[in-house]
Length: 611
Ligand code: ADP
Ligand code: ZN
Image (cartoon, rainbow, N blue to C red):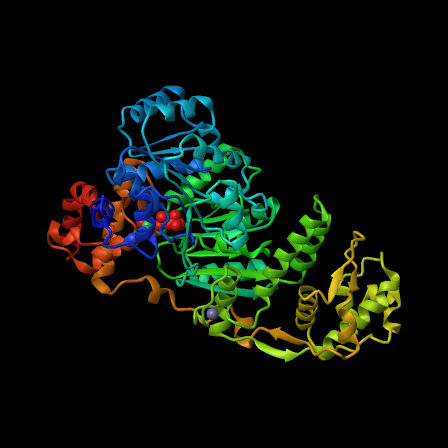
């Protein structure tokens, strides 16, 4: 095939099957490379459009594309979505009974499949490998390729076995895809999957439609409910928590406040997890409260917000999780509330974690990077992208850009804290935490102070000029910058570090961050009003609602999530364009040949009725 042939063939498939006008970003280059038989390592943020990178080549090359994915619970939806597009797709995993699996195998051997999704543990069985050898394979796509990384939180040992694909099928192109991608992880993926000659395609990791906001935690439940009520009422979202009990408490709280919330964590039975996940995907406006066990591969396009009410352990994890918001490109919110206790707790968890020193050091570095992001006085997006090795200017769509925090000279305040910590160190083992230190500084004479005679200390009452909240901010930032540490004694006693000395001696000036007054008062940091973002003008909105209702009925009767029929973005475009003929409709992004044939007349009728 000449280059021109490859070029037009890929584009033809994109337009006819998927109904999209043109490729995005690197997609075209990737697709051409794989169609020509090359290996590829693709790094794109969530929502960047990874699926097309292997789906189009699988359709263009002879044989079946084998997609390796750890996400068994999502395979049915993925196959349903392809079937709606007229693509011949099936899956093989442990949820099927053997008769169905046998039929799928027969279809593969007969050459009747364009795409076959397989779980890695299934793929690596002798039976499956032998079957694959008897059929024709167009490519291997290794989805969620970061699962091969032993440092990541999604590590799946089965993924290590996938390097054998290359030995057994040296001529079949392999394409590995992930949204998790520091340079380190990338190297690890390439090594472990033996992708020695693969071309690396690293997309921009920016998600411009996501507004990043990180706020000081004070009363996190109130802050969360305010966020939902004022900005995301009735919309789909995910709330991430660190522990299972916190997931359950938070979901219960949200329900008591009238929010349609479900919960998800690894401690629930598989049946409950599957049911909650399925409801989240199928019903409108559900808030899922979850641990990080939830979310990988969830391709629900209209998640409008992701909220973290506990500090994530790494920037990489945080970016993955927030990336689940706004895959449809419409405005979305990534909101994180964090405070002093988060820092203390995470440092302690690292100290107590199993594993060797190198492992703990690595966890510590990951946490430091996360804290750096939280405490930055420069654009969040700049910091985030820097972490992934990309450089940009201030974004205008994060809390720092919209409502810059104030920087203030915290040297004297820091000295006061450090002196108090130094004085209390003699009494370590007494559980004098951050709260007690703040009470001493502010000169409060409560029970605890009297009992301990700490009102006799020279530092007692020297910090009456700042509020409790302000002192918590100082302590938090000292911890974040490692000018204070948490002792390993099990009491969480605060202690000085080597770097503290320079501050105490006045050799080092310390600039600290303070949320702007406006940001502190409200969660509504320069938010675009909801109406602005989502609602269409007048009659178009009515048409959109009618189309959504129609879509809901179709989806229910097919037993698939609504977005498998059409995305909101496509319905919005139809509502605005008011197509009068099938030909008009065919030009709308997201309307391919099969969907035009299946739903075209119905849509035109809905549009005409709304006029
Ligand atoms: P990822 O797997 O990278 O998270 P997806 O493959 O799910 O992303 O794609 C994200 C969204 O973007 C999907 O709704 C997809 O249909 C859409 N999309 C991808 N590529 C294009 C394109 N070239 N034109 C229009 N929409 C696209
Ligand atoms: Zn910014």
